[in-house]
Length: 319
Ligand SMILES: [Zn+2]
Ligand SMILES: [Zn+2]
Image 1: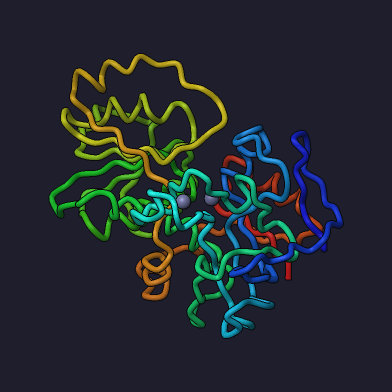
Image 2: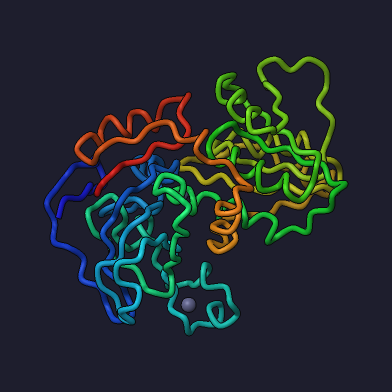
């Protein structure tokens, strides 16, 4: 099969053997796969990953046991957990210490014609959703993890830092829980696109006057600048939710965290069923945040586009 393979230095299109599903796994023909910031970080060395990257996908099940799934259009949760360690038994499979993660850690991913995933990771895509919409499921699920961790009240005030695709999803998901949500970013066009789905936005480059401090500040910048800015904007005893993962380090004096008694909470993968439900009920708009779709053969152009400052989600159409 055709696949994009990262050897630690560069990404290249190669012919590789199809994955052989293990017991309990399904073989999936990938229809399309999304380029995530994590993929771009992986190409810069994040997680020291080698192999086929890509973890956001929609595909068709070719074979599985049980066989009832064959022919179904699915999306898949990306963490492969052991199912038997104390964390797994406590329902924290995404934190399984021996887990592998599709296209991120110890497991070939979705930038390929086929992938294999455990049947228990798969979710059938409602027929009303297009492939392009369904390709956002993993990203929307990551946004849904926040209300799964935090009990928002209507009266809570929230900033979302960053103007990328994750920020756009997080702001829409959080807005379903609390009214006062604003996205703070630097790219005027992207902020306009976010504002077009009814989210309040502020341009950090044109910061006239002081920004009020908020109960929650969610860092979706994907950069080391996010956390220090969040510490400036959260109220004393407030909560910072850290969504950013990046290759690199942050040199910063964390005294404001102690002085203002701030809670810092990490947040990663989230519930696919909630995400699919929000997508199906049209509670979240994703297509305004689809920048481009490229065929697999044009993967270099796709990655270039995904890296561009003005890009939201870029998809690779594989079948
Ligand atoms: Zn991702
Ligand atoms: Zn486990």
